Length: 396
Ligand SMILES: Cc1cc2nc3c(=O)[nH]c(=O)nc-3n(C[C@H](O)[C@H](O)[C@H](O)COP(=O)(O)OP(=O)(O)OC[C@H]3O[C@@H](n4cnc5c(N)ncnc54)[C@H](O)[C@@H]3O)c2cc1C
Image (cartoon, rainbow, N blue to C red; front, top):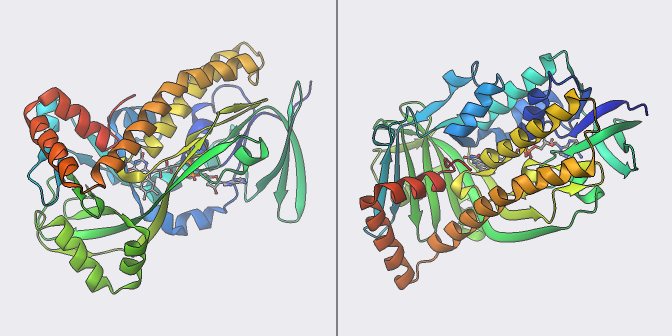
């Protein structure tokens, strides 16, 4: 049978583009369909958010040839400090004690996303169709038919396999009739960057406060990226109020460990929900990254988890492509789904319980978690595990 492409990837975000780069030498004919024009990606306010990357994620990016030219823009995390505001419990973790070069790295989403998009655009082995949107899908026994809209033009393509990497509001998930579960946390992540009067010493702070978790991730010596979760009403008031009031409240929640804070970037608001697809797989199609699991950013797990989807799928597709067999077979897609299920359940479960545990100021629970944090500070292995999980830095 003749196919226009072997593989069509819908969504040129981090997950879709990393998958394309992972498979660019596989001999597969690959098209990436991306809705946004390149200039829009550069200007997107969402690009201001910082990503905490686990060491395993950085190793994978290195293996894909992505990390080498961008590592200078990342900041290594040498220490993690987790505390509960107004209570005594805290736990600390250091790279030196764990005998690793870094506990993880921080980079702005814009730097990573634009670099990965540039590598895709420069690759002679990949076809980028952008800006274009997928508007229809029809799977048959031997091929999947993909309908695109590019401006006023309609394009119809066929492929052996379609990968939906089109994010939390995935059209591919809807077009494939994959049921989804959405829990609205009624919370908003407020994201900005602050300059600090004291150096951060490569320390990432995760502070659980009665009004929600607050993370400060190091970006260079004197800057930190703020991810501050508040309930929707409070977040709205903090966005509408003056920068001075915002900063005053932030400083009072975080304290003076890094001295005086001043804002160096606009405030951005991200409404938070957990979106989980019931299955990753359909006829001749699979969904990856945020299209399967859009998480609360409290534990910085989203892209770390999505990249593990990418690496597994690329590992499963490569040998089949080499043997020139069917890359869209049900057997292959089932094996892939099975391989990813446990990791998804573990990370989603951990993130969800972390939010519930730490967004509750009921005295007994607060006491229990403080005893927990204090005990943890004295049990190195457990401390290492919790701290790494909480920052999204744990491996699968
Ligand atoms: C505030 C915040 C902080 C975060 N912090 C961390 C962190 O510290 N560590 C971490 O690992 N993760 C973090 N994350 C999560 C991380 O940003 C996401 O998991 C990751 O960016 C998702 O990548 P993706 O490629 O799956 O989806 P997306 O980035 O959403 O990409 C989807 C792409 O598909 C395109 N698209 C959409 N619809 C269509 C269509 N119909 N046709 C064609 N193209 C389409 C979009 O234009 C987009 O380019 C954070 C998220 C937030 C909101």
